[in-house]
Image (cartoon, rainbow, N blue to C red; front, side, top):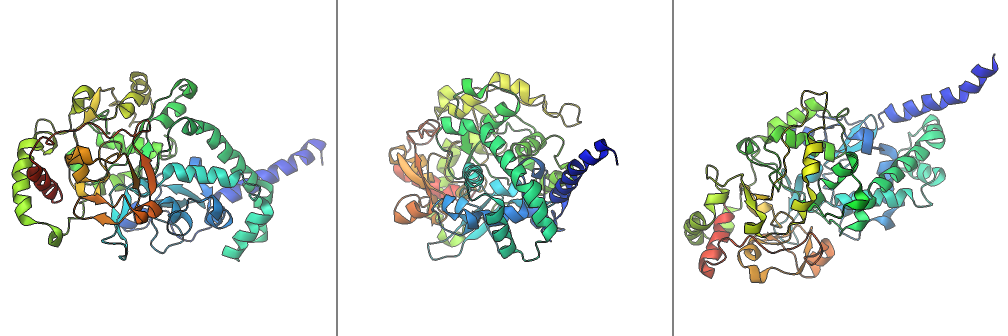
Length: 468
């Protein structure tokens, strides 16, 4: 045997082990089930290649590194806001080729409880008001940087969770997998260094476009903008066709918005699963929100509120109105300007280069100078309010002097009178995350439409909004 061939054997062995480790499916559940509901919850959209973590390690991270999780209710990944329903991984996680990724349901599945003693109801398509995406990224980084992230500790935990983990599995993890994860997550840590220069995002919110700036080669050291915004709902996308979408109205093509969201979740133009995404896109065209419980409505107030709403709100928020899906200048709406500032003219140009060479290349991004008027379907489940989620309830929206400077986001017990989730008191403090409106990007001013009406009319509007 030649010296050259002999020296290549270890390299070939490592490459073979790497390929095995990356491709061997270690979860019996398919990436996409036959049911469209299960597909939405668990189906891949193509994020695993870039942000995926091998399932055996992913499963034991909350066990080995429980101390790195936030002190919120639940077990394991639930403490970061993931929603579980008894499977081996929560809603919004995918398993393709043995790697755990994220999908649309990560950001668009929430829970609501009638009271503190009630079981949570899972609502598909609603904003994931409890999900801390930034917290998830920080947890992975903290775990990988911990001395306990080593072969002995991890494999011991993996074998305890899965006794069928073989000697060959252990060998691949010793030679390749663990070090590869460390390198990948540490690269991600460097890429996410801009996190530390901005206020924490907290549950139910995400900075949509600053990650794109890093992806597209912008100098993040020269950029201090805060683009954090509330997660939106996914209901009734058919009626949103042709409206100006995203909070600042920077795109009017639903399908392009969907692809940009998938890429923002970790997919790339090369890995994007178009067939899987199309199946979800078709389903959400007519996905309906859950109605507000009729027994909790006050019919007399609803009738009065409908009339007051028509006078004060319908011109911007009713389908068919001149203002629906149109951008209101920041000088008029006067809500926090940071999200608007973060999406620059230069970024709009660069966004329209994504997908170059593909039939779906982005072409519809633009820069605006305000925020877009949204339809209000299912608004009762879309709290907190305004583009940055800085107003906890419909009442606080309509009564600006009651907007709290500090409240807690992510608690899922519903405030039936005020229209939103309970956001103050010991239970909200334990189950949620503190939100401070004095921090950059968190301002709760502006959107004062209808707030000059008599208090009785404003209360009636709140009651009517619950029916939309």
